[in-house]
Amino acid sequence: MALVLHAGAGNKNAFKALIAAEYSGVKVELVKDFQMGVSNKTPEFLKMNPLGKVPVLETPDGAIFESNAIARHVTKLKADNPLYGSSLIEYSRIEQWMDFAATEIDAGLARWLYPRLGFGIPYNATMEEFAINYFKRTLDALNTHLANNTYLVSHSVTLADIVMTCNLYQGFSRIMTKAFTSEFPHVERYFWTMVNQPNFKKVIGEVKQAEAVPAVPSQKKAPAKEQAKPKEAKPKEVKKEAPPPKAAEAEEEEAPKPKPKNPLDLLPPSKMILDEWKRLYSNTKTNFREVAIKGFWDMYDPEGYSLWFCEYKYNDENTVSFVTMNKVGGFLQRMDLARKYAFGKMLVIGENPPFKVKGLWLFRGQEIPQFVIDECYDMELYEWTKVDISDEVQKERVNAMIEDQEPFEGEPLLDAKCFK
Image (cartoon, rainbow, N blue to C red; front, side):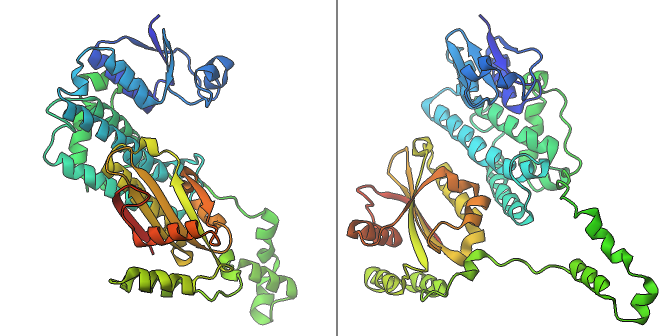
């Protein structure tokens, strides 16, 4: 049987396999009349991918899902395919940039675009600002590499270029206006060069850059009855006399409401002053155990604060060092909303991949703050365990993580980051 790709005709993740097939001389047929929300909910489709996500490639040996895996499979059907480079180092760099395209470009773009499209993540102006700033850092890194390279790896198109271009496609076509991308001229040059390659153009067609950023999803309006109250007061009565009770009530309703307090601000006062601990941590340069660690436990208030260990759930995916470190850096940046209520240490552990990511966090209150869980999507990527400070083993592990002790649990530290 021929390879059949289940996805809609305009799906950017399906483009990856279809473009790879064009370069590789492999026949891949796009399933006809695919309807998102219908075709991917059928029992037949769910047998191929229980999550119902697209694309899915149907092969004689069974189904494959995840777009990068599908693109790899199609590419490897051709022996010695130049899309995978001509040496081991080129192969590794191709994989490196494919991971970068997934974890930095695709994920970063989604955090900016999806809330504006009303997809899953609620729109929040503050979080959007963080998302844009982080995404700009990612594009700046890509722009720097492309300043001296026509393609991502070697001197011809590879699978890395196919994946990167497809992940950039949604940004260029839906939210990244010319005013935005002009800051990254080498990324611009690269993208337009790629989408105008014959094999890309055959699959994607003509690409037009977004002319405007999608509007913020409309907010629910107050009920019409409440809006009408202020109009009931007669103009003459308002000018000549003090407002009658109903008008006064209406004016109070129209006045800006004070911003609700964070629930953590309503907790009983704590003997631990977080800023004092952060200053002690930052200013201690010698005798760290005797000064900073001892000072921490002298300050620590187990009733007002709690300690938590975290460990990344998907450490087997951490195969590229700089991608892993960037992943942690992005997490800390998105945790900025909790700076007033938290202190954290994140360790990247190991000399060789896959690298382990583990952390220690101090939070105000006895639980992980709900607003952090709601606003920082990275939280669900980690397993969280509350520290039992009565356990001397756990307490010593806290000390080791605060101190960046090396080796840590028998392994060297690749990186250590602090959130303070």
